[in-house]
Image (tube, rainbow, N blue to C red; front, side, top):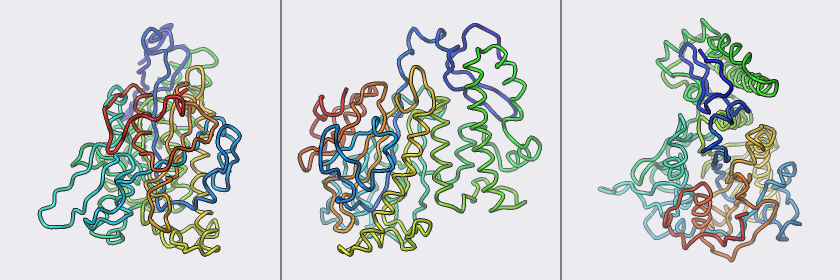
Length: 446
């Protein structure tokens, strides 16, 4: 039970059967923690889209604040004031060193490390990469949150579909250490229960869902008691938050019902939405809720892995994504590749818009986070790792300059950007991969 008080601790929960539901930031919490945590809580999100881009449809032709939104970037129009487009950055450690590793596995491996991924298929070869930027951040800003970081994907790796060896490096962009990758979770139910429920066995989950129908049913009384202690604005926030949690749970249950009918769930549910679009929106919404309730402060998500075989008939592209990326300057294939890239940006833009509409402190979640969208491959047709697609969305509590296109000198290490983003959340490290220093203080820093 909650104890009625004039202020609530920031780390407050609604507790029920198998549920510890973290609460979003309320005005009533501010007096309780204003002395040391009134400043905006930093949050970092990393979104990976593989197979490169068509630069003519991605990179703006002008720099500064007056840049035009290109075909691929047009979906970001509503969050333009929170957007910074970066061009000229490179991950040259993704280039070949004659060791046998394919261009695509190297691209995803290097993205948050700046480290070359060597072929691991030979006899006696030990797998080594490096701790990724998201995990460096999680070790610092995530240690006080219930879930240090989330690693998600909506594009499952397919064994045997890599340039060489196996698909070890394309299935995740997050590494806890140089020898330990974080497997990216595909299943919304697993993510939901990690955030809002106690998990437990499949039998316990199934019994709970049949008895209660929703994990929220067990906290209704406590939520009503809490609402009686809050002001009108906080009560509205509570209602909207609980409605959002119940809606994402309903969508997950619907997707599972279509896939499993009355079959008992296994330890790791195999049902994911039939629709790529529905799957993506679910996973983005789970991240938004996790940020809102401060359950986690660091996320990564793969919307399209390297060598992706996904097709997109809903946007007129029935072809496999990877095949289309090798367009060989064919106008029809270039158009299809650009449709795919625009579609991915559209789904990402919807996520950013929802963050902008979610209050957080004196601003919004988008004001208080930084999202990095991009890839370790620039030109997918030629397998080049220069002039990478790189978007920053969010203001990180006023620390990021936004609304500009910044063009860096060619081959500027993208690892310099990673160092800069870590600095802005209070995590200082000497170097990441092939970094040569921070980006110029007056480029992306406010």
